[in-house]
Image (cartoon, rainbow, N blue to C red):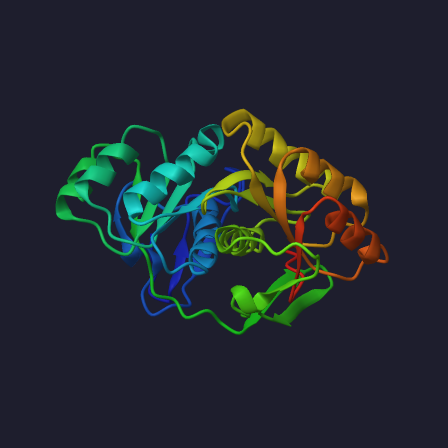
Length: 305
């Protein structure tokens, strides 16, 4: 429901007893980007913001499924159909009711696959007309055209003590972002998996850990109050859906003790990316050398509070 002064009322806020509205700050209103489906909510907009930020890290065909602002399945592949399938298989239970973000056009074949499960929203740069007709069969499913939004260089957040401002972390995550510290050099494919995982971990709530294989998340741990719990949560998902496979691990902060690295080693991790700065960095390096794990220190810490 839009008003003349760009202030648009929403159904309600985070919960039905809260009133909410949005003041547009892009050229087009968010409502103008909607193709079909039920009215966009306060929570939808927050999830849209989170998903688009994560998707913007990737240029190859990529699918990001978001649940409660956190990615729950992310994958890149040669085509967008395969990318979506891999992202869904990352954690189908968590994907239920989630929001799909795709960086390539949705065709009818992909629409048919999406239509088999329950999702809140599908966001993509383009939809084939036939795909729209297929997805419209679910009248509440929101279809959104992915906006081309220029990421601002300043982030701000409102607190009880005033508005906080900070420069945005816009450093690209690529091979220049990581630096081999251990003796064992990893394969180029494993390095690609690590870079993929780092792109995802940047967009998970801290403490955050991402396990990846073949440019697919195989385990995610986030929002935990200690890093060991975040790691164990990620490993729980990996064991449930992927069983015994080697993998890469990205952490948004350093592992302060060797206990986490030991857990990773026992579960088949071959490459780890984390920031430096712990008083136990030397112990971590020594452990990875002893157990032939490739350890890379990353350029920046990737906390998201």
